Length: 120
Image (tube, rainbow, N blue to C red; front, side, top):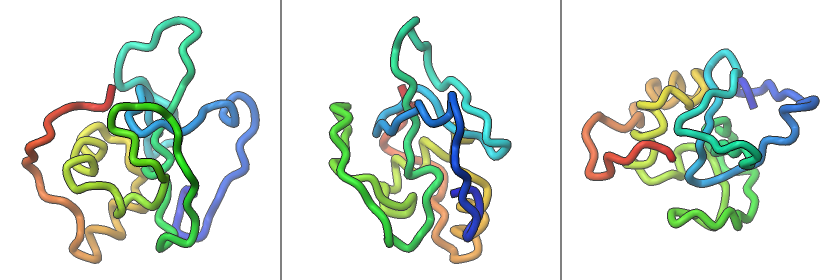
């Protein structure tokens, strides 16, 4: 999902990037995959699908990524704990349409958090 009602069908190599609840990559507003932490050669590329989802929870999927902070389910960005939202927003990997809509709703998390970890 790249806008409220716009979705893209990925081609190679993008279709090979899977979801992870604590990913080492993220998508920018320009739909570029960027590194958030060092990635070892051969390591699977993961990004948090929730950073591209705002469908009023009409879609979800089970998650078994195995990360210590695995949520067990992938849902819309607003479903993430506020501290995790702040980390991903600070990393610049939440699509702009989500940021704009949450700001308009008055539900964009404020700065400051007890979870200061960056995505790893």
